[in-house]
Length: 191
Image (cartoon, rainbow, N blue to C red):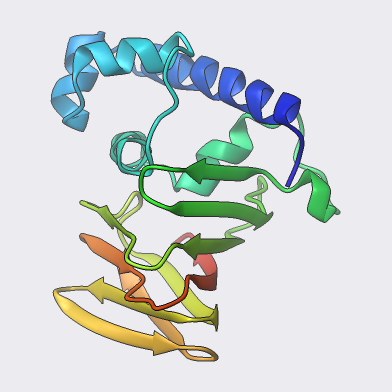
């Protein structure tokens, strides 16, 4: 899963990328705060690398910038390689939500699909208010445990081996009811 040095450098590169994205849009911190629903002070601290974003905050920013979370995280990599050894797969941890995301097959220019491995601790959940890209195709395959996935106000319970596929146009929620953590593969296909 990488050493502490690589985690720190990913965090630093993420801070720089977030600041660059805002500058590319020509937005002030106040404008981004209004659009993302995240406080100006939090955004400022994120861009300076003083604060690591939670999954929820990163989800808000991805929606505003029209990117999947995996795409944003891979943008902080120098060059996406064709072969991605397990030790080089970017890992994002949100200790607060009990969520870990590994970009198994990260986004690449010219390709529309990516694969993410996700884990949620028992009782943990993450919510996304909007689809980062409307019409995004997702396939969720539960590898271990049980997941409750809410899409279009419908709750789907997935057990080991089950797969849910859909086009995401609005909010979604991932939850692990327990008693053990859930591990799943998420395939994301851009429209």
